[in-house]
Image 1: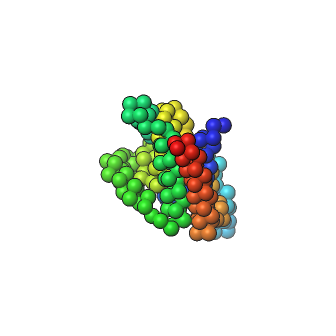
Image 2: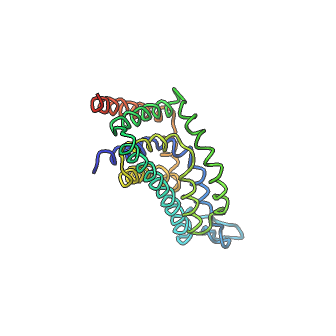
Image 3: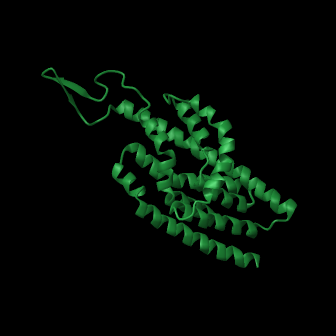
Length: 246
C-alpha cells in the first residue's frame, strides 16, 4: 500500500474520537430511523397480561438499520473521495502551471497535521478558523440534508451521507492538504477514500452500540494520546519534506 494512503487511513483511526463527536449524532439517528411496525417488533411477548421484553431485535429490523448505516457511510466516504479528487487536481494545476513544488505542499500538509494534533488535544484551536471558512459553503449544502430526513430508505441514507461528507471539519481539512500535496486527482481521491475507511470502525462501533468503546474513544486522556501521535507524525513529515525542498 502507498505510504500516503496508509498514513491517511491511520489519521482516520487516530481521529476516531473527533469523528464520534462530529458525526455520532447523525449515526445514532440512523440506527433509530425505522419505527416498529407492531407491538411485537422487538420480540415483546405477552405473559400473564404483562409484557416480557427480550433484548434481541427482530432480524429484519436489525438488517434494515445496518443497511442504512452502511449506505450512509458509503455516501460520506464517496464525498470525501470527490473532494479529494478536486483538491488533488488543484494541486496538480498548481505544480504544473504555477511551478509550486509538491515538496512545498507537503510542508504545508505536515504543518496542518501538527495543527490537527494540537486541535484534537485542545492545546491550540487555530483550526477553528479554517472550519469557519467551510461554514460558508456548508450554509448552502446543509439544506439538502433536510430532504433526506427522516432517514427511512436506502436512498435517503446514501444521500444524507453524501451531504454530511461536506460538513466543516478540521480533521477532514487537514487530511485534504495531503490530497493537495499529492498533485494528482486519482491519488487525492484515494487518500481521502482511505481516510474515510479509517474513520469507519469508530462510527460503525457507535451504531452497533458498543458504548464502552465509544467511552474510551472520547476520553480526554485517549484523545490527547492520539493527538500526540499525530503531532509526532506531523513533525516527522515536516522534516522529510523540508529536506526535499532545501
